[in-house]
Amino acid sequence: MSRLVLVAGVVAASALLWAAGAAADKRFSDAAGDAKDGPDITAVTVANQGRKVTMHIAAPLTASAQQLYYVMLDIDMDGAPDPDDRIIVIRASSGFVAAGVTDPVTHERVSEPSLAVTASASDIGISFAADDFGIDEDLAFWIAVGTTTDSDQWADEAPDRGYWYYEFSPTTTTTKTLPSAVPVKPLLAAPVTTPKVPVAGREFSVSFAVTDGNSGLRMTGGTMICVPSVNGKMIPHAQRFKNGKATVAFVIPTTAKRKVLTIKTTIKAGDQATTRITKFRVT
Image 1: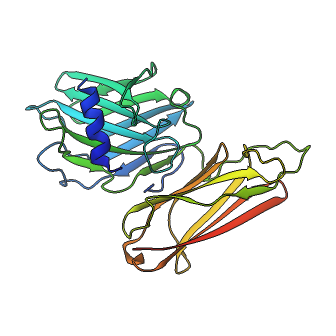
Image 2 (image 1 turned 60 degrees about the vertical axis):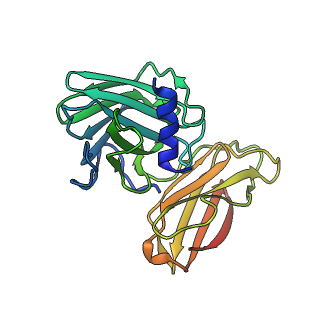
Image 3 (image 1 turned 180 degrees about the vertical axis):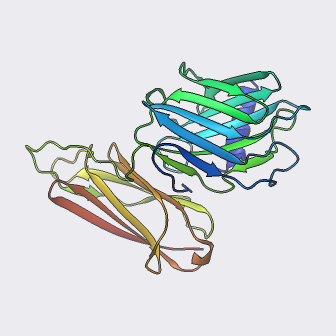
């Protein structure tokens, strides 16, 4: 599903990639002057203190029309909109700001009492409790802005392609303690990709269901190590292992066209480890 289709559906109902990040405060920059006849996002700053997330979007308010912001939170980090994700919808103009949260699939309003927004002449501020949104360790997101008079045409998107990625902790793997009474043997199922075929210069995500080979149940702990590469060169990526699902997401280099993309995924649990290598031809 494209971004335009996704946000257009929310507009109707509301008429109401993964770029690498870092721990703690993080500033993400977007090119200045790339907006199409409207608000221009130049930077987004994300911070986390005591599981309270704050985001500041640097974009000037226009006096002529009310601005419409869509903040897509890809909470399960699979690169596709689903009921686990959320869209923060913000309407702002000089002296006015209002916000709500929607489900990106049903486009229905969702109650998030911890959400708060502010607006100034050059900044949109957002704060919310990470736990209220179901955010665990990491977060992928992108932002679109336009005007309410032309909501089918976004003036600017940030980033221009893919997602930005913010880590709540310094590592890119999630580690949880497994019960020691019964040995766990990780098994990785066949990969599920979004989109189905990798395209050079586009975002791409791969997910694996991970189960315990002894019990057949989903693994609820362990460590994920993933290395996507082309010609032996690792691609910057974001990864997550949660609730029996291992996911890696990244933007495929433009130089990878017609080359082989290799993804080496290892799941470790105690002294047991399983590695699966998958290969794709990039178009």
